[in-house]
Image (cartoon, rainbow, N blue to C red; front, side, top):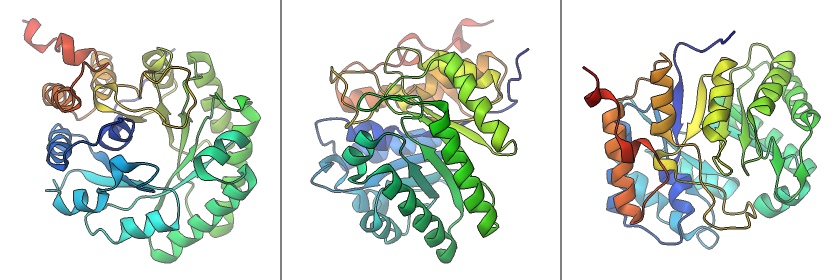
Length: 317
């Protein structure tokens, strides 16, 4: 029996994860237009940029200017990504960044070293320091991510126990500090997940923290993104990261071909939810317009389906 949620929330990551995967650097005005179109479609959260090394990710070098130029809508949160102290302080210095306290765990040594230049154990201690920092600054600790939670191109298969070990550690940390357990995200960073593993790992997390809100950050790398979202919906998951038009991916994933598909496509997944009777709060027609805008900005056909086929609204009597 399916246990579909009544409502699903999509956190849009295209303006950040999508554009930082591109080799070109796109005009600030174009990205601002896209962010506003996405917010205008009813999305509750849009991740706009990352505060990372301009040398490593030059596409995001103008993050402060982007946030300074935003015309914010009151119904949308405009968030950013950071990976270290310098990035966090740069984000804090931008008044228009909606700071969301988040931490990131690694479960394979090669990817931890490549993405954050430290071991898995060292990174865990850094995340503990981040939690305490958020508490001291009065920033709500909202999200914890386990990247490559299903498998890693660099480190191989990831056992369920690697994920549940993080869950138990974090549950103890939150209990010690008397703070709520955050939304816990399983990230399929490199496209290893399949529907049965989605169910298996969600179930394993719920056995330890049944009260926790579980989120998924899924990529469509090997064509199973939609099936994985459907499996998660059957498990009652109602929180997903996604990217307009299927933009995105991980620049350090080590895929054999650089054109591997990106994140699950926001408008396609929202369409599936609406067809299943699950509310999203999104105006699909406006979101499709935003996806076509993204395609015009990027300058090549993108991977979304709905943006090319149109919705069913105009076809129904």
